[in-house]
Length: 435
Image 1 (cartoon, rainbow, N blue to C red):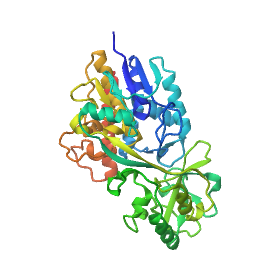
Image 2: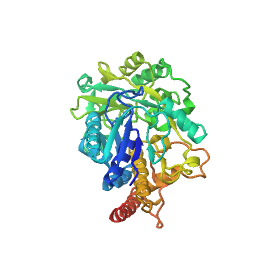
Image 3: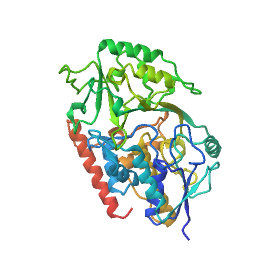
């Protein structure tokens, strides 16, 4: 009889892994510690909860994460199909109704005939076949167990979530609707600051009181999700070249590009809640309200949720895992998600996908699928398993880790599109083979 595969954790990677196994006729036991136990960053009892942004980032093929999405879309990803079904307007990005997305993934997983959901915390590494996808917020007990299993230490970084405000509390006499460079529809609320307002805001931000986070140091913050106050301390113009950059925007009151702009992105389908783009933070709640309401259009903002900060954990994967996210010593014990060093929602789903299709092949006695470096899915797996990497750090998908083209194409967008088209042709071939 075919072995039942355990999947530990029903986040993005775990949900994707369970779905892919089940779709291939494998019986799955999906273990999730919610609702009995939650991490500080989790707020709901549903699966695939988005604890940071509600955006899955760019959706164009010239963008590496857009390519990764399209690969997964063609391969029956439950995460991407659920995101498409609960999409909210966000210019050229794929953003979702946060709760609607999580509800839909949960419904699909719970209703699959090959998946049995088991509630409760796992505190030891189970015997294989198993995929551990407990994410960067792995419980202390299981984290310790994984450390003992490998006989090596985890690495740590810190992650942060941005605050949410009600749409009706934004002063639209001081804000306007526009997407950067007018791409797509005008989906973002833009809150401008002039130089004097920016100077005052920056001064209060860098001196605001932070919440206590054990072991926090600026130099250990992962660049992709850096708290806004940490970013501000790195230099006067750091925010103006980052989340507050005014490029591609025009203030209708002046007809000119503003000095700095805070963008708000839709967070739910009802368009009643918006998040402050790039404003991940670990300031004390009272300080968040005091400082962020210095932004003129947010002077009367009603905060639905304040930003939070939490420690994330990831493995020294190049020393431990193979290209299928499996233990080099025991191929029936695999890992998936951000704990492997892939960074981002879509990347986590991609790791769950590859770990699952490989595990299905192992338990069914089939040949392992070959996702080459010419594909985004394959490139991620090869990156986290590259033993030549000495200083391993979490990474988003990017074209630099995907094999380049033999021919030279000068324009970056055209080159990226050519790489994407080559990748999708390979994905289509793999799909025809019945991976």
